[in-house]
Image (cartoon, rainbow, N blue to C red; front, side, top):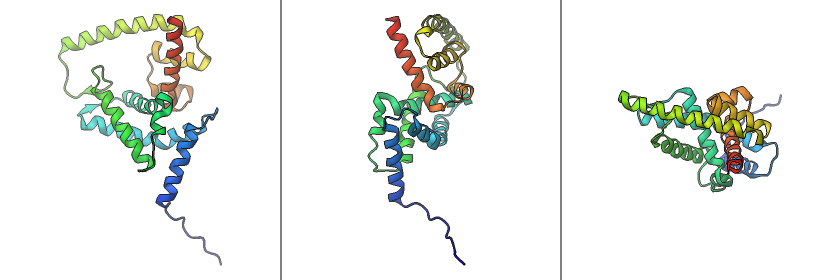
Length: 202
């Protein structure tokens, strides 16, 4: 009678090799984006947890949509400048630890932004709230008018995402669910579309 042992826990060398393989897959020129999709699938839960904890340490309350937007911001930062963050992974720590540090820095920076995506637990004076809402509404009207005029220069996927974000004011999480695309891909597509629109406007 043969006996099949339980699988052993991966060694540090095996984890390191798997981390390097995943990073290399993300950096490879893969038209289907399978490496990046695997990366987002593996780390989206970790990034979401880090974002929530970072906000909690700052005594900030995040709505689900705001948290999703910050998660997408983290993944966008990882891809920014031709995936400079991924290229900077040297393997001195696990990939999970590396992503945790990146997520904490990006979330902290976004939460310190004056425009902030978080709602502080202490309420702002009503006059400041009214001023912020008025400025936001004015900017949204200008954005909608410009976006509508420039949508024709985008491909179908870009146009859908831009319309959902800028005109329908959907969050990254909502766009991901509505279009059935990875959360981490929303930010990069928006960035690419905005670059095209800037060139058209210029």
